[in-house]
Amino acid sequence: MGTRAERLEWTRGDGLVAVGAAATDLTGLSLSAVVDGTPFTVTGALGLVLAALTLLFRRHHPLPVLGAVLTLGLVVNVATPAAPHFGLTLTVALFTVGRRCRPAAVAAAGLATVPLAAVGLGGSLIPSGLRAGEEAESAPPAPQPGTADLQRIVTESRLAGMDTEFTVHGTVRPLPPTVGLTVFRVVQEALTNARKHAGNANARVRLTYRPQEVSVEVCDDGPGDGPPRRTPARPRSGRAGYGLIGMRERVALHGGTLEAAPREDGGFRVAARLPVPAAAGAPDGAEREDHRR
Image 1 (tube, rainbow, N blue to C red):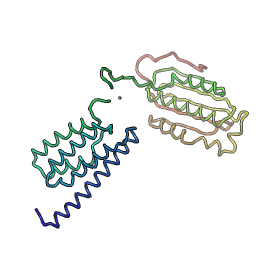
Image 2: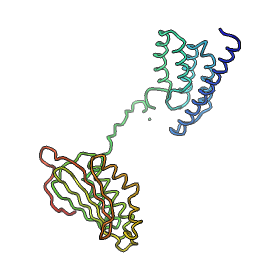
Image 3: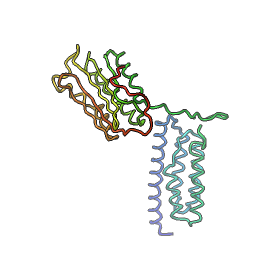
Image 4: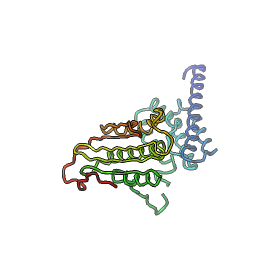
């Protein structure tokens, strides 16, 4: 049993563990209230504190303490809309059982802990976001844009006041979805930057299919009727911000390259090249040379 001083030391240690577990679980409850929009209730907080206080007796009564922690956890999570989580109090109680009980008792405690905690946390294994007689909606994810959507953003650019020309060159063929999305994002970002920085300018989008790659080029002819955009060089180089960095990284993921720089005769040019070996079988579409849209 140990001396009185040793028993007092154990009590102090267990007290620190209980306080720490209570503080951690209360913090988790408050964070779930903020993130998930669930209310922070007095009932839930009191239940977590009472469960943590049972840890004071965990050394001499590990199995009853685990049972009390599970019971209080069930009450808290059934009675209050707390978000599902495994608290520190439960972890400490189960750890103590593992350290102080026989293997058979440890196995039984572990088997009982998982389903009881899972049922109690959140009140049920079945989502609430479902009512009786209703089924979950399996809405398919929206398709990602690709090269077929370039005409749309070119039209949007024209409607925004920038005269934009779109041409397609080479034999049109299907592209991997991620490559098509990358081409779309490059054109979208480049046209957005042109409208922001090039003022009353014209833009040109050129999409080219080659046997082993696809390339896209977006140019504007600034300065148009707006303020100067190529001189001094600093404002033009300012285009190479986070948007162009993101484009460059996106293109690099596919083993491609991206160039973004002012043009010698004025304006700005963004050009990306992505390797895409020609797929076996007939291409999707006819050969188009200098096809303007």
